[in-house]
Amino acid sequence: MRDARDAEDERLLAEGETDRLLAGWVETIQDICVAKMRGPVGEDVAQAVCERLWRELKAGRHRDGRYPFRVIVHSVTRWVCRGWYEPGWQESELFDLDGAAPDESEAVVVEVTLEQFVATLPPGDGEVAALTFLDGLEPGEIATRLDKKPNAVYQAIHRNAKKLREWLEE
Amino acid sequence: MSPELETLLDELVRRHARGEPLDVEGTLRRAGDDADELAPLIEAFLARAPRRGPTPASLRFVQSLDDPPMLRARVAKALKVDDVVDAIVAECELAPDARPRVRRYYQQLEGGILDPTRVAASVWDVITGLLGRSRALLSAPAGPAPASAPMYRADASFHLQERLVVLSAAEPPSPLDEVDALFLGEPEG
Image (cartoon, each protein chain N blue to C red):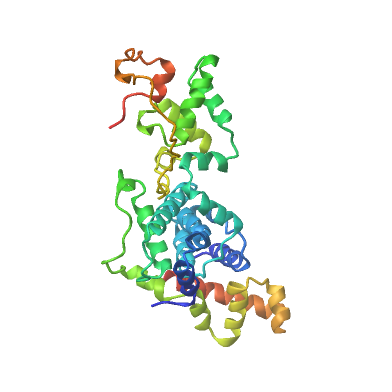
C-alpha cells in the first residue's frame, strides 16, 4: 500500500533526482539511528545507511518502484542497525528487496501514517491534533485559531498525547 | 508511561511539525533511565511521520557521499590536512623532519590510494580520535568511479628515441624506516 508521502519520492526517482530524494531522508535516518543505537554511535550508523542507499541509487536499484522508497529506507536502516556490531557486515552484498516480501513490520510502516492517526480522533481533539502534530502550532496559537479557551486546548493536547503514545506502542 | 515521557514525546512531535531539529540524543538524555521506553516510540513516530523536504545541508551531505569518507569526515570537522598530520607526528612521537612524508602518506590514505589495512593501529587511533569516526567507516570505499574512460591526446610527432629502462633492474628497495612502517606495514587479516 502506498500513501501520499510516496508520490514525491516516486517523482524524484523517476526524474533521476536521486540526490534530492536521499537528502529528504537524511535527517529521518539520522534521528532513527540515534534512537535505535541510543547515542552518538547512531551518527556513524546513519552515515553507513546513507552511503549504502546512495550506492544502491547510483547503481540503479529501486527504480522499478516495486516498493516505496520509504520502505527501502526503513528496511536498510533496520538492517544496518541490527548488524552494526557484527563483524564483516560491511562486506555483504548491496541490500536487495527484489524477490523477497517485506516483513510484517514493513507492512505496518506502509499502512499507517500520522495523518491517519489524526483522522481517527474525535472531531474536536482531531482539530487540535492536526494543528499540534502536523502544523506544529503552540497551544496559544491553536486556541486563537480555533477560537477556544486555552484550558480546553491544553486538555485536548493532553488527551491527544496519551492517544499518540498508545498508537505508537501498538 | 510517565507524564514526563509523554511530554518529551509531545515536544519532539511538535519540533518535527515545525521543521526544527529533533535533537533525539538530547531527548533520550533527558529521559534518563526511561530512555529505553521512549526510544522505540520515537522510532515508531519517525516511521509514520511525513518525511521532511531536503535542506541545503542535507543535499550537500548527499552530494559529498562520492568523496572519500576520510576526506568527508575531515571537512565535516573543519580540520586541515596539516592538523591531522601534526597530530600523527606528535602522537606517534616522530621527528619533525618526518612531517612531509607523513603528510604525503596521509593524503594517499585519505584519497583512497593507500591500502588502509597496512596502516598501523597507532596512526588509526590518532585519525579516528580526531575525526570522530570509526575506522570501518573511514576506510569504507567511496562511491563508484566515474564511468567515462580517460582521454589522451595523440602526438603525431612523438618518436621513442631512448631505450626503455627496466624498472625491476633498479636498486633493491631499501628497508622500511619508522614512517614507512607506520603506513606500509603488513596488511591485516
